[in-house]
Length: 298
Image (cartoon, rainbow, N blue to C red; front, side, top):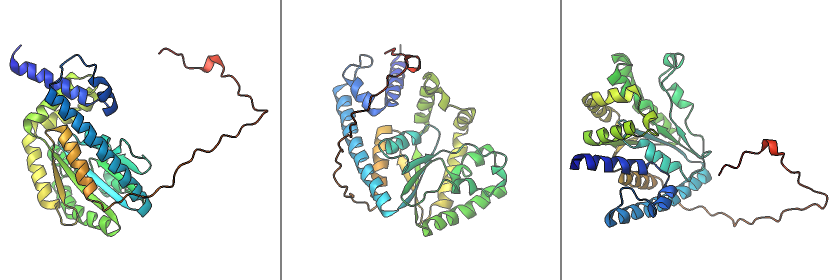
């Protein structure tokens, strides 16, 4: 086996492990036999976990502040397929209340939605006071995939660029904070991540025919991205680019930057005291019928 093949297998293995939940990763670290880590890798991994958990603690404080102040946040995550948007969204929302911080990942518009004002279906997902909405892809689909794949006309494309900055200004004037992230990866890194998905049965669902076609049209997507930046990077709602070839660094950098965009502070909570359970002398708990019990196989 060549050195290149060995390194590819090693990277694919690392990518698979990286998809595990962080707590499971920590539990497995001391028992993993395959692809043993070097001391430097183990130290870097431990440092990543410590910093991630610290940042997630700050996100909880941000969430409390958003609720207490009735703040409204919209955070857009855009980027090429396999750029790591879903990974950072997962780490942001992992410890938060889904009633406060929710994710909007809209499918392709249906026949009725295609006849509506383009932004209409996104408006229904905007936050109320005390809410954060993370858009896993957003109205910028028109500037990217729709443009490259020919799903919109030139007139619709131009109308989008006339409307998007005004739409975002309207949101900001109404008290909605808008933050826009673009996850940037190299040609080589996207190829590696696509190969990882192809060879991992747990990730193959992430690969659609559209994703594979986007790989072929890499250069067209680059032109579309550059045009999008040129025409929608505004003082009110600027784009922020996250260098994402290293997934873990990208997650930490994005979360820290997000925290820096909000002047939050820790909210005081009264001490929680568990009340005594009331007990009645005439109460008897009925046994659960065996026929409705889930079998204890483990």
